[in-house]
Length: 383
Image 1 (tube, rainbow, N blue to C red):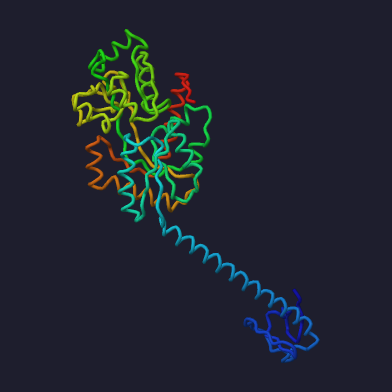
Image 2: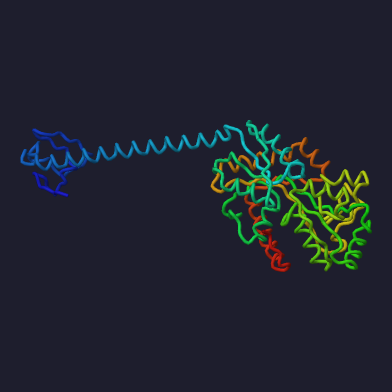
């Protein structure tokens, strides 16, 4: 910084003085002085210094202009992104069910799709991608674009696979983002009328006397009915053979046909068969008895603390914009709180949930830890 004395009583920074010469006129901020300058103008011998100062000011002005332009561009971009997020969704949404059509998860997914479409103003298309106990459909969604237009409607297989499978084509907690659980339903242990028992205690007694002679169907190795049965076997010390199927519907069909003796199912899909006396309801996995089946005991009445629920919820690819996740979660909560859906859930024995993404994420973490403990205790692995 150049300081000069030009007839002033104290040093003056020429950039702070209104200086005028034959080459430039530069206006600066006011400053009071103890006396007037000896010369009204700075000599032209200072023109070179003024040139430098003028160039500096010009560069500063250009820098400010560039910064202003860039700031304006950033603000415009931010506004455009905000508008784009606010506009979600602006095209149909695909809701992938990783199980075959006909099971309770598929039924509830279609109920939810109808309500979500009405709420979001865009079609929600249910697409079944079954196989490998839910892994095929889950992998498809985990590797889909994280834009909120491809979602997964899944079950506890989401956490079971993470615990029981040695290898996975995706990371359950890192590659998929929880959105909301729509509802949950306790498991119902049902048996064919030809089985040599009609009560839960009768089943336990027979299985203890005849280890390995009973067959239980499931929707596949590592599915919730299979794992809940394994947990029951561990707690009671009995042996029952698991017969895996490609989905809940064919597993139930063979039970009704008498090809197997047992199955953990849900009231939503097995209730009518129980009402028609084509199946016997032995026990339910809620901690309290169901008002729909008040005469059916809970497993916990015989095995204290035993419970298991089939929850059904939406997840999205990791990295999906928070605005989209929040809107989907809010829409899911409104859906399960609607009188129409509550009435349908009530008839199927489904408890509405509608929790937040954070609550859902915490539940996923708890379940993975729980199932890993069971895997270690039973030495069960799922291929």
